[in-house]
Amino acid sequence: MASANRIYLLDVFAEQAYCGNPLAVIATAEPLPEATMQKIAAEMNFSETTFVATSADADGGYATRVFTPVREIAFTGHPIIGTAWVVRRFLLESTPEQVFLNLGIGQITVDFELDSSGKELCWFSAPTMTLGEEIEPQAIAMALGLVLEDIDTRTPVQVVSAETGAIMVPLRNLDALDRARLNLDAFGELARRGHPPLTYLFCNETGRDNNDYSVRFFFEAGEVREDPATGNGAAFFGAYLRHHLDLGSGESPLRIEQGEQVQRPSLIHLQINPQRVRVGGSVVATVSGELLDGR
Image (cartoon, rainbow, N blue to C red; front, side, top):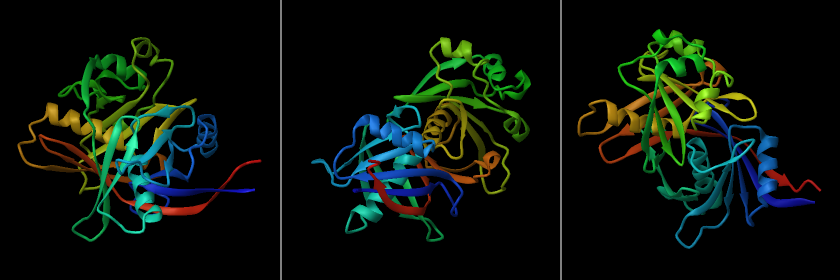
């Protein structure tokens, strides 16, 4: 028997279909059991799968839960943008300029705006982020299969977090970025110190002239995986840059390229000012359908 649950497959931070970071969004009138959601996320095998209520809570936000193939997480970027896009496009009769999602870390606002070319961009304002421990460059270089000289020591290797977190790793150039590979065994000592294997690598050498940074993001989900586009990592990166660089008192717009190494080119927009960090990008829908109940 078919269920009333709808499933949407999207590419987020994508300039065209089959680029960016793929996402499954499942809209449910009634909450699914947690074990079922985790099984569905494992079946989808994307970086994340989200489950969103088809009607709003009393505060106007749509209850949303986010699962990787192996666990639930409280804050992540491209699922926020993609889920809000589905709510606005498929669950509402109108197309408001804002959509509110209720996640484990609280309510997140997603804004919908047109850029100078008329393309729709979805933006979320990052929650409060904390800059944490600085990590010795040699330790992270070994964990990434690099040498000490590959680390750009002008800014530190540092943890940034908002419930979940990642290690910001500055690299000298694209060559070092391309050579990096996360080794869980070599990461073991950092893991024993309480650092999850979530590494956000960046350099200011880019493959496309109009972009500002190239990045990669490695994480563990049963095995080492690489994310094609990382919205929460970009938020962490914005907080990191705001702390370590003199960006002035105005808005600092940045363009981040990611995903080239996994053949999913992505473009992430980042806005930084002294009061907030915003992350934005485009969404392309590829599939919609009905989630069967499996019985």
